[in-house]
Amino acid sequence: MTTNLAKNLAMINSGNSKKTYMRVGTWNIRTLSEKEQELVDEFRKANVTLIALTETKQKGKGELTLGEEVILYSGVE
Image (tube, rainbow, N blue to C red):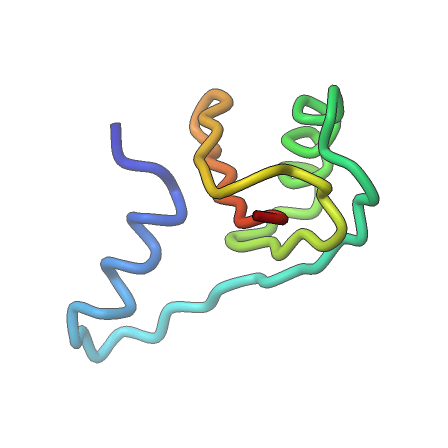
């Protein structure tokens, strides 16, 4: 499955002369635990292409797929 983010990044990197805009946001989430659906809801509401999360308190690195959205994280080691 190709995510919206992947599609947008592919368009940006394809060298097309058509302008493509990305909406980027940040969110100090404090912890990601049990907030995944809330995150997706806010992501969609804000019509954001890419969001950077801080203070997730997730351990290690990984990827969560929720519907069409993909959450990539890199937390504490």
